[in-house]
Length: 248
Image (cartoon, rainbow, N blue to C red; front, side, top):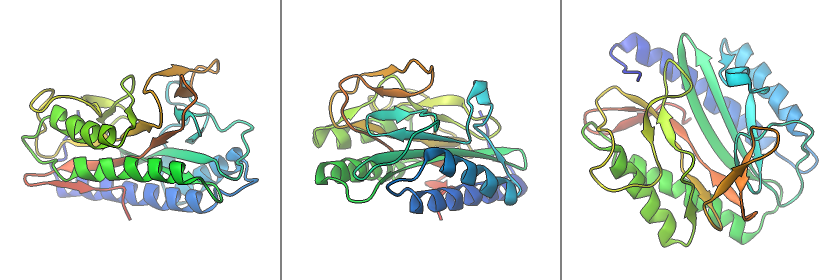
């Protein structure tokens, strides 16, 4: 578990978060019909390294790319490979940056060209569930409180909340304690302390929440083939709220 205890550490985390936010903004703008996922992956690595950072995901537990690029029914961990974006696709862009010893992690799901109203509603609901949960985060809040906030918002709109994957602590490593599920009961789980760094990341499905891993060993998709959306930021818990370091 990473705890920020100095101004210097917070500054480094913020700087890394800004690099990541700018990288994702660039990738999102270039997620167009006909674009190759591998092109975005190469652009992300080039952008991160040019800013003085390192791709946090590339080589992590053997992952072969800088960005997890997940399309339509893929929830997370999509390998760019030979994927090509098509009009109407929704694409999750999940990236991490290591900078001055600190890791930040963030995701945005974007539409390629013109997307359906149903797809737009799913993306918007996922993002709004994040902000609703982020608004309650402060020292003393439990991870179950956060998960409950996400779950109740999402399920009230008829969507599913993935159970097999959760948010997590981040900071010195890509994945740390505590686990931050997107479901749960108020008052349950770990109590957050001031300075703790977490990645809050709702993963929402248009259909059932059950998922499975593809034969490539990485890509995780919905079992029923329904669309999935993912939204994530790295944040630091404060005494009376939180600071989101991966937001421009």
